[in-house]
Image (cartoon, rainbow, N blue to C red; front, side, top):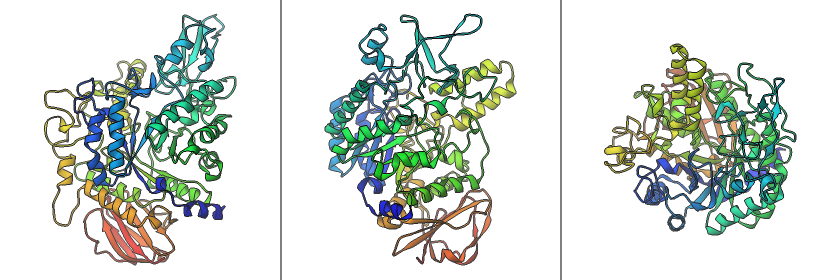
Length: 596
């Protein structure tokens, strides 16, 4: 196995070395060129390409910009081959691709093919009658009936974005239920139908021919469901509907479908692919998807790290305490597993479906926010895999404050959760305050507040006389791109400048940071995550204090530190001992050169 891993890591490829920047278009920058005032648009993205190039970005990944009713912010697609007028036009996308090419950059599209919008022409035909041409393009089932003769859904699966509701939606016209795992407006496609799979292949070809370089594949491991749609195990007897992911994640035909996509489409182009695969942490199953020899996907998003504060086996909007040892174990395990077993990692701590990383893993107070953001940057830029940076992460943007009313939140998941909590705990202020805290800690909305470009009106996201689609975080006067790019204080770097330098170093030392071996240096320290990255000719040691206290860490002899060259406290190399005990300040990260 080690030989296979070494071979895979020796295969140097552009997409492995790339830094990918995810843009959530609605919240990136509004120029007014789209049809909806206060909404980000494609012209806004094109206008910031020099900013992204200067940061060190190679690939821009766009969350969905296709035509959509926007029930789930574009993840409910009504036309895969057209652009929603809110964002612009196909010509705007062509101009964006041209601008990227001029700068030596690439475009990655977001492929959402587990489900469509209920306004897609395919579904409109499917629901028109039981004999419709595309009836079998979606998953239809007759109702069940309880002992009292009341109509019930085909099984007890809960909706993913509204766990108080069934994953099945009743269609009065044809007297059957259709499966819609996320919301009733997002019916699941029936991938058992070869015509569906061919239609999806056609969508991929359309965008690759237009100039896209690959795809992030949304919840791609949900496309194969267990035959018969059996009931899910009971996790919470109080809930009428239960998490059903054991029966629809990584189903029986998943690998067949992924290999077919590769064989019929992806193998004809030089592409990058990354699959979103929630609910699955089993290394054997993940390796079946990303093993280079199997020709399915280049890599997947492993959610173990961003699920670290979920109650195990429960819903996402829950809170669970975690320790540095948990983070250390997760990161170390996947660094070793992918290297030893012929796979490839994706590196991320943020995306559009998760709260801000500095609020989740560190301390986002005014005193420590910048240090925490740099600490996470130091970790991300020194690990093996393809690096993903989410918009605003390079600025250390953090969660909105607890003082915000739940009505300020726009995400369908948050709205459904707040409705559920008010229904379950009406009049119980303690329970509702706890639910409000869960929203403040875990809601997807935190990643979706407008990017803070300047300290001007609306943080420079849109014009002063235009209301942003979502409220700007309150701290934009001090946390914004303009201030961080122009920051000039002797001995210090802003979060943006720290990220830029980290990406430059990652590129310069790619043999170590991208392709090098990983060695965990200390698996016992209660607060420190430390490791050594090595190539044949050079090595670096990283020590990260994930606590708000001063700690001592004993440097193992095998670390062989020569010189500490980076701290997130100072722009120059810290004056620290290279042997024995080293003192790490709150949320301090150190990077040192080392003997191989």
